[in-house]
Image 1: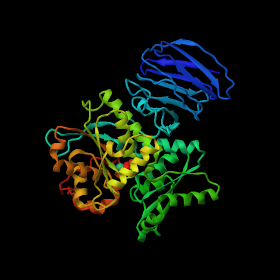
Image 2 (image 1 turned 120 degrees about the vertical axis):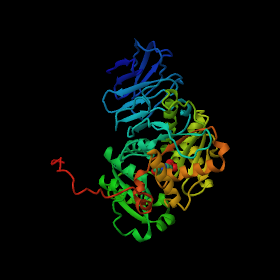
Image 3 (image 1 turned 135 degrees about the horizontal axis):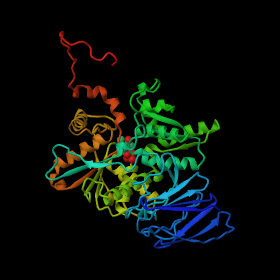
Image 4 (image 1 turned 30 degrees about the vertical axis):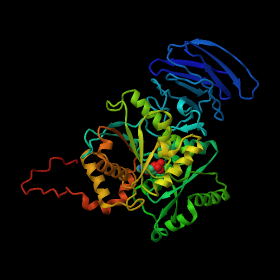
Length: 484
Ligand SMILES: *Cc1c(COP(=O)(O)O)cnc(C)c1O
């Protein structure tokens, strides 16, 4: 068994290459000395132990990695515990980041290589949860930046900051990437050769799924809900559809009536059965990627945020009083509010619902929390507020005007379906109850969705101006750039 070890003080990291068939343990409270035991997976224990000195005494690292089926932890780690285990076969890299102090191999300061599949270790405050994912794919650009957002008309002393989850990627932009990192790793673990998912005709989730699946070599089948009048026609290339169809996603259209009648689960299973009968191995991802596994994406988000706060990468803010986001299928809300609670972030989480009702989302997020045995009531950890306006994906001109004004005054483009409505809801709340928000430091999570704006061009057209035909006077000089 080949073991090589090195430590880089700059990254405060440890890397071990061990054989693929091993469970590896590292245990030493101070890490001035490391001892380890290696077991063969076949349980015929070949035991060896060695001590090596480490240049870093900051770590407490006690982790076991196996070939992916099991990840065990023996000791609670408390300080920037950082370890990475690279399987000698070069197939798999395991890592986790220490959220307490300066963990550098986690989501934040040092991400695994893009598209690598990595063993996952949860933050210590979430390690008691159920359904801890064994792996994730590194797909997104993390950590996403946080900066102040000078929105017009805020209550006295209220400061709003924005966490740019719209910058998780280009084709992959938005909040769904965080969930897909876990969901697609599971799809691969289960030997899938394609994924199925379902959503509205401009679903950001379906687009992100199509791109991410293609990145890692899986085909994608998207069930998209549209109007009865359009369900028989080519869906075109507007917005998210352009990206989906460019990356070769198979699009199946259903009408809104069919969607309501049969439900997303049955429609997904229907397509799955059809593909199975053709010899395919589909993996079905639920609407919005919002199942208990996908929820881990926003548990990780909170670990990332805490690290950014500790590292002082939050525009000088050390604590946020409120966190605001849009709620569409509920996974983001469930993960973020559960993790904020477990990690004692001490921030009020507000989720502005863009469809269904408050009751629906309290119950839905409760189901996700219960799936992880989170042991807390959704009503205690998040405030869900109705912000759906005319209905899902339908925009009032006031909402679009707000999105346009905010873009024009701050450069940040929200989306019409989610973050635009969430901001509208938050600002309405601030206008109606200014004292509740005065003096607060508020973090708004920009969950992405720019491509959905393309569907609103007709409605947006009258709101944008500032164009003219450049008039070139008669006496203009000779052309000075013949190449251009
Ligand atoms: C899906 C989505 C949301 C909502 O997240 P959920 O986890 O589905 O509640 C918010 N914003 C954008 C841009 C989205 O695409």
